[in-house]
Length: 377
Image (cartoon, rainbow, N blue to C red; front, side, top):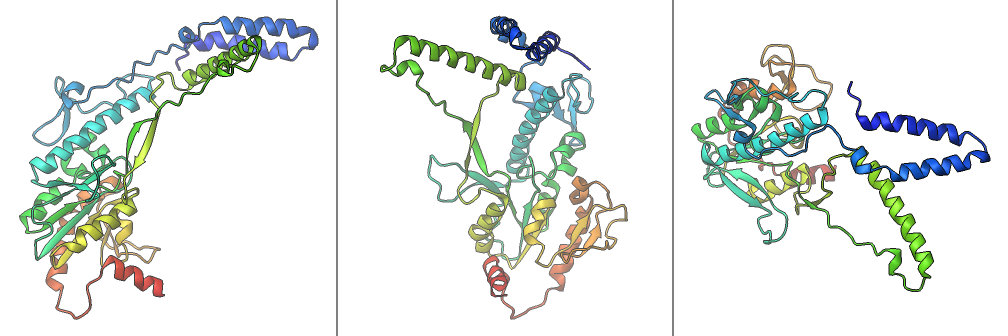
């Protein structure tokens, strides 16, 4: 366990304060003297930490990592996998470094969707103004015009974005297991149109504007002596507040605020928006959804199959306590791997469902008609 110099200095001071406060009124002078001592301490110097600045590269090359021919993330010089504990005893710094790398991975996958999968990046809302916050999805050229089959891919909750199943798998395993790219390529090879949703991109972050609070010296009606006294108290209060803020967050990261994207402010809103403006407008006779984890909640009432984490062999029936989709084993105990491990079975399920479909006069199920049915109940 590491103990900083500031901890060693502060500990006896706070103990002395507690001992003095336990004394009677005759100890007030000592208390005053100790407070004066504390006010003279250089807080900036005292609160210096061993933690390095949270200043990380913005490219894979800057991190000295690259994806090899197998889609594995490896160090450029050593060939080793990614190391989380880059600096011992600095978990917060290591976590921030991991998150910074994750943001680069997200942009890298976006590039693969456009360059390797030939998908188009579509901005939403479709009628957004130039200045308002926007999100986006990805679509194949024939997503809305393919008359036969449309595949819609939806990731789960958390930090993942369009094209990803699990960031941890991308970083620690490979691109095939952690991204939707194998699904997209096979779907396009088999004649599907493709839409890739982005349900976690719900807002943009901007720096919180600083609000000027007039000081008491702005009040010209008060006597000069009173204003000076109030200013002194205000400065001392601010100094104490800054002291605790530096202790809590030594890097003093910028304060940010969130601006939510119209009609896409949550995963549920996003799914509804894409349904109404894209999926429902498509020409496809059959629409297939591949949804991981939380992404599947919106579709459990439709005709489906749920591959769940289980130690049973792939496609083995798994008993469920809930009246949702039929459940079968994904052939893995790891939740984040369920989509990848069930990859061949998913396409087999789609093929069999298409072949088994027969002509029917029953109207096609839409989000609106489905909702009305439940409201009538």
